[in-house]
Length: 435
Image (cartoon, rainbow, N blue to C red; front, side, top):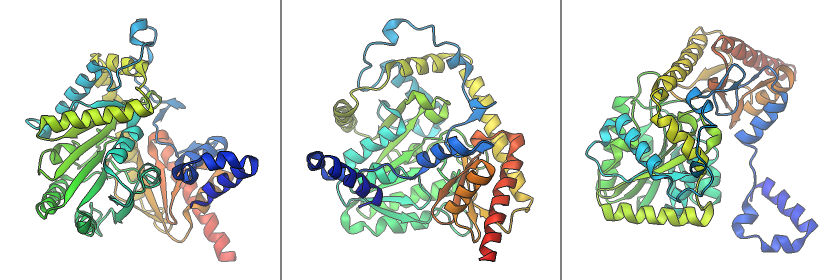
């Protein structure tokens, strides 16, 4: 049991042992991890200079937003705000999101997939996947560069067995061979859930065309060997493809490729459309059989009804208005170009070689983030030192890696951000040498 969970249990027992006895096994194991949210909370208090922790985008010291959404909050009729939304989401929104998927994912043409079902953002969609497809000790296959919340969603909640593989090859490309090996290591189990997240959090990497083709071919080979797969694409940062990567979701490539493979897409407006607090996401299934799509939708509605009942009606209404606006795409393009320029600036800064003694950086070409691999300094020690001495917030991941969210630092300030991270590294190196 996690030590944080043990401490919480001790506090409950001490105050009222009867309440502790009421907890389920899951309840006893639950805890709030010292992950991104906790680190971001600390940064919010102390990072007075730059706070490159949380996965949102900012502009001029405020959250980035689309004027088409911000300027219209007083224009809605009460009927579009106050009643309960349908558990599956507003039909109009589901239709609009499906049309958006078809437009942005050419490989979906002629393929059979469900109408997107509205979820309370993407985390909720992933938890639905966990509930539907994972029993205790079922294998969850995922790369070693992953979003920490997966451990709560799939591991702690459902008892899944994480089977990880190195995200990158030695050449800095996606490790399809490692993925295939990890899946086949669970062949005797008969089934597995594979979780793919592109653009990746924390690395900001999306496979190139050849890598994507190799990945899909590997999945077909595995299925041909008799193994059943649920392949989940976590598309939280979909569309933010800045360089030489595929420009569509791998869900579109994997959908309907084999009778033993069920493709599931979890996505949302939260990151794509800069409306993090709206909490509007979607879950979509791909299958050639309409009866299966209908059954999966009904099972999903059962989970929604038994948990949140339905998602926010006002947020869905706001999003419908934005998707129907003539200005929507143009405004998104402006924000996309701004983030693309920040990513390019980070690469320009790092390629100058001024920090080569301090870190290497993992390949990145998309999304909100990039990761540094530190040379000889502990990631958490550096994070805390940067907060305390320089007012800079970053996210530590494991012993060696730190995640930097260039999405929430202005382009002209990125050089100073990395200079300060480097200065913090040098401070800790000097301390280590003295000791």
